[in-house]
Length: 301
Ligand code: NAD
Image (cartoon, rainbow, N blue to C red; front, side, top):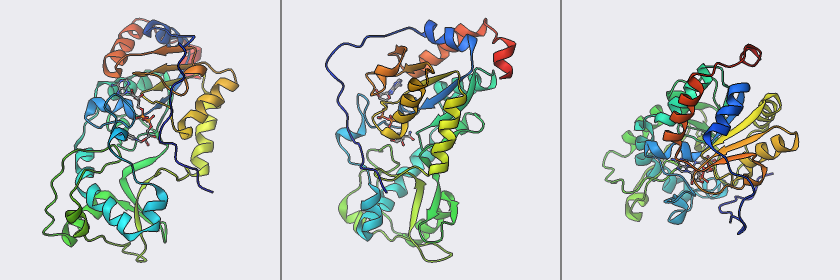
């Protein structure tokens, strides 16, 4: 069964009961290893827009849904034409100081694991090992017929060969790796099929209205259960896909900390909330922790 896509969420009007500072976050990290859950907000400083931040793309763009992609050849042509340009921008993006800080915290043993809702691969590029990519990654392609996966570079070469006169010019990049493109350019675009079985090719990411594979969800729940605290970085937590881990942590008494610009749907579960841009905030957090070695018991756990 597929979930209904949640595109928006409105923050309740009342003031929030709890806030906090980076010193509070540092205090938790100085005593225990935390699980990090990141969202689009950690990648905005790398030039990839988010959905729901101040200049979020949902204000002007409706992302592709699973039903639209699988249900219509026109929908797929539109996606692949726009993504043909958009993916190159995502592939060129570099990790920013926030991604590097997370990698440093992981290397220092302060972070037990990283789950990201992002599909841009920037945590991996920053050197964080074993990142759980909850919603997949745009650098892979999956065949909906035989489930064979292949690299996006390979598809890019095939799409270039199938569209030698492609005249699209990227205007605005959207988070799901596509760009605004004129309708006549979209109509002239030729898609390609799976080389093995002729099936439909889809980016190996979870579209709106599609479920995250069950084993991946279970793995994340296990990571939450094993963690001493959950630190959310740059997510509005509008989508249940990420929010469920925050609720799960809170329900089991695991402290939740959130660093994010603006309100999130998980604020009511957080003991500490910090409203700061992540690049600067995470740099400051590293500095606060630098002179505070992790207790041996926590480092080894
Ligand atoms: P979201 O757009 O709903 O929320 C992002 C949050 O980050 C916003 O609250 C925003 O105010 C905050 N933010 C933006 N820049 C920030 C900064 N520099 N410092 C601190 N906070 C900042 O994104 P989401 O909660 O991750 O959910 C969107 C879903 O869409 C994700 O699950 C993901 O699959 C997909 N997505 C991926 C990417 C990507 O891969 N880079 C980008 C956008 C969306």
